[in-house]
Length: 283
Image (cartoon, rainbow, N blue to C red; front, side, top):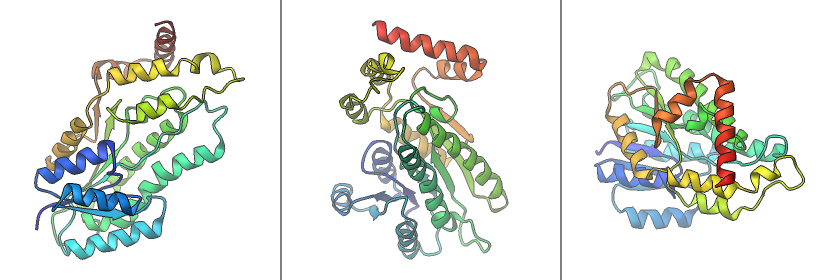
């Protein structure tokens, strides 16, 4: 049987690119989507070597049902990797983002990851009587999991949580040989930027309006430095193949700048980010 992987959220972006790339590299890919019509479309497009799983990561029962199906297919073999990719990004100043929006952010990006881990970890070897070589857990975090961006507080919080969960999981599974790492993309080429431009929410009547009315310029700056999703797919492949990959891997244009900001004292980094935003307003 071909080596197999699970990737959540494969309808677009990083998930789609990774599913296609890994299938082309000889893996059998189990990819999750939320709708049956998406599953049918992807299975036709991808062809043999791809199996669509329909579940919402927030629905524990659906996730467990999918894990049972995968177990029936792979038998005593293990997945080479679980790639937790599904996620959303809630936008807005923390002073005004609704509690329900914040809760939705955590339900998808944090609780959803936990649901997948609890259902699928035995299928990468997190069990006492192992029947195959253990696999890996690759959680898709973000540069925002280490360097918080203003007006994406809910998203930053969710990715900081993923960083902590991954460290804990890796240490819990050391004795079983199951590795757990994070990949931290920066801006990635995606239709999400056009959707963000079409969202005209600038929080009028708040102290943030004057800054946020220029958000299309901030989006354009991110677009200019965004990387193809295929670059992330290739890094995920390298991580699966590596016997001991780095526990954190940033993938972003101008990596030196991000690493510099991470090393600077917080107050200096704060000032640099504010100057960057104000500079975009003047352009």
